[in-house]
Every structure is written in C-alpha cells, then in structure tokens.
Length: 186
Image (cartoon, rainbow, N blue to C red; front, top):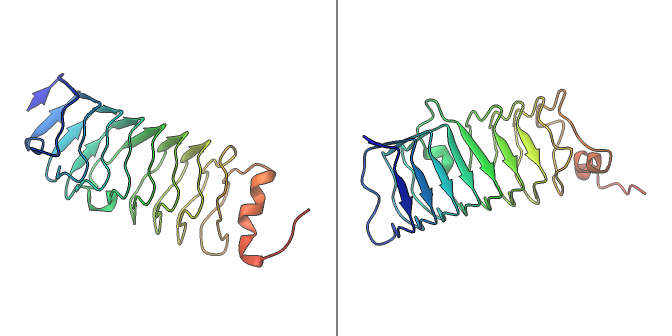
C-alpha cells in the first residue's frame, strides 16, 4: 500500500501507474490520457489538474475521491468497482463520461462541463449540480430526487421518464423540464 504520497507531473501514458492501493495520496498535473488504471484502489485521494481522458478504469475502486480541475473526457465510470464509490468533482470537464446505473447519492459537481454525459438509470439522489453545463446530458430513468439544479443550465429532463420528487430548479431552468413538448415560453 502506498500512503500519503505526492505524485507530481508524472506522465502515465508511457508507463501505467503501478497496480496496488493508494491511500491519502495527491496526484497533481499527471497525465493518464488513454492509460489503464484498472484494478487499482484509490482511497481518500485528490487528483488535481490531471488528464484522465479515455482512461480505462475497469474494476478501479474510487473511495472518497476528489477531482479538481481534471479532464475526464469519455471516462466509463460504470466500469469502476461500485463498492464504496464516492466522488466529488470541482472545475472538471466530463464531456461524454458514462455513469450508467451507478449510485452517486450526494455527489457534488461544481463548475463542471457535463455535456453529453450519460446518467441513464443512475441514482443521483441529493446530488448538487452547481453551475454546470448540462447540454445534451442524458437523464433517462434517472433518480433525481432532491437533486439541486438551481444554478446549472442547458439541461433537458423528461419528468415522465425520471424521478424528480423534491428536485430543485430555478425559475429559468424549469423550461428544461418542458423541452419534449416543443412549446414556446416567453
């Protein structure tokens, strides 16, 4: 097990990160682009300004993980180990990421670009979407109960296909719940 270690400016596109368990580690300005971090356990780790675009995460454990300023384009989070999965995203780009069928209760997405991200059948109970771009993001059979969308924008959510009880929306954002009716609101 590797504990309390700082990994800075490491390029893991040449050599993949060694398999094992990483606890309370910090990864800063590291490049995982297209790399394979499958079957690795991360606990209480922080990833800051890292590029995970197209990285493989098959059976990767992400327990109490904070992503800050990271690029996670096309990451297939649904392949991660779901046991104790706990994530937090601040200032991240998650375009085309997939969270299919995951339980992400109380996850925070703050100042994130989530364009075309797939949340199909995901449990997003009490999730915070704070100032997030949700253009073309997929919400289908998604649990959005008590989710907070008040400061986010460009979302389109079908209330008949998703559970939205006690979800919070701004007055301006409510139009994203009516898109399927193709009505004009003035």
